[in-house]
Image (cartoon, rainbow, N blue to C red; front, side, top):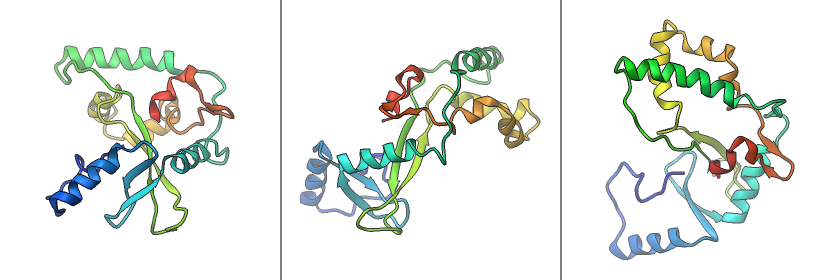
Length: 176
């Protein structure tokens, strides 16, 4: 998730003591400081409450469907082939990918007391980021239609959560 001090696009409008206090608050493990979903506000919330809300979203069977099998190996082969082609043609460069980050932004415009979270999967720097640079040219620009027909797209929308927490077999423990 973005940190407030690094991710800000505007100049700092805090005094030295306020900035120092914010730095100290960000070091605490019992609270999280997040930008609000809308309005540019800052939200301070309990880490436990945040984690419960995130797990509640991931366990919501109305939004996510459990995977019957693990399609990652098949997708890895397909993606590797396309990336090798792209690397060979100079469309992309070698880079060490990071794991996508799952986090939520508090929707304080909905509730100040118990704000729901807007789920975010940040894929910046992840394995599939280079793929997004070349897929439109490979598929004639109709990327939405292509993705909706591909199982690779749906893996990010299907539920990968078991009742006892994240499914480590699918390597999703790195999302939290």
